[in-house]
Amino acid sequence: MDVKERFLRYVTFHTTSDEESGTVPSTPGQLVLGKALAEELAELGLSHVEQDENGYVYGVLPASPGCEALPALGFIAHMDTAPGVSGENVKPRCLRYEGGDIRLGNGEALLLKDFPQLANYVGQELIVTDGSTLLGADDKAGVAEIVSACEFLLRHPEISHRRLAVCFTPDEEIGRGPDHFDFSKFPAKMAYTVDGGEIGELEYENFNAAAAKVRIHGVNIHPGEAKNKMRNAALLAAEFVSLLPAAEAPAHTEGYEGFYHVTDLQGDESAARVGLIIRDHDREKFEGRKAFLRELVEYLNRRHGEGTFTLELKDSYYNMKEKILPHMELIHRAEDAMRKAGVEPRIVPIRGGTDGARLSYQGLPCPNLCTGGGNFHGIHEFVSADAMGKMVRVLVELSR
Image (cartoon, rainbow, N blue to C red):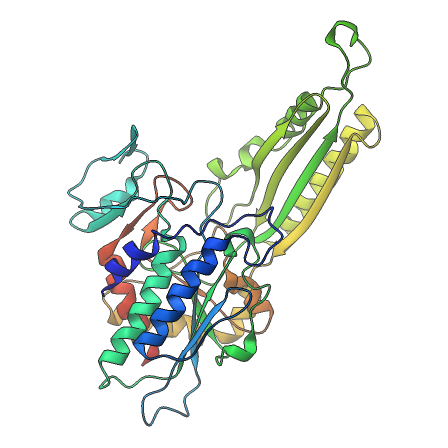
């Protein structure tokens, strides 16, 4: 089975994670895919294959004869997909891209004017959605590439390689991927996540991240007698959102620019809630963004009454850069492996995070490799089958 066939199989599994769930993993579909992956790894011939009670899948590819003394290397990808868009009943479509716009179905399209990076994929085989779900390339493309690299090495014993530790994690998209990572089952002291990004991207800087929930407590009363009595929580939520810096939203930022991102807003006259994420590569600016939210809530409480607004603020992960800098050989090796596989490396900051960010702070330096896709977390998601094939070769080169 090649990497494209694997990917098309994996995306049929419904593995959307759920931030409101109290289970581990957060959704049962991740256990189903994990079980299938464990069976596949065992059938290929990996050792120490296990799906543990938390849904994590581990396996070890033994070193080639004579390479046993080399330090093990780890590859990590996540099984879940983002909860913002449906990941159920994914219907992928493969096409040879000849340029221009791509019609997806359901009246949706990948328009070249909106997604100019499509011009980089002319002549390649793309896998796209039908316009009703996300695709799941984040991160089932990474899973497929890791499994395919292991299979390639097993089928080519003439390639000398170090021992490889493999792990597929649940719930990365809701920030819980490293929560139950078992280092005793992962015999590598350095690793790479293979998690998103267009071909050539190599990343060791990510956002500092926090999640916020602002709850608004209103006073509802019949509108006919509401004067000087009603506090409409829905309108107060809108007021809060209007006071966020308009230019510092994801739609207006790039590169190292941070943002405030409203992820959800719900409520009525009596009560409302605004969900946000806060991101910045610079730790000092990140702390300043959190302080701004606290000050904004305090201001609104002075304006509308103490207790009208409450803020829950929780850090999610931090920029891995400081943990990777002492291990830059990981970056240099990845650049070399990419060039040997015919891929020109581009070091870019992650405008998001990976399991590797938290794992790096837990003692496992873990920069990120691309998978060859784009437009993740939405119906316009796509991945290049050609790029996935190249990334399998990159992983093989890293393993040598």
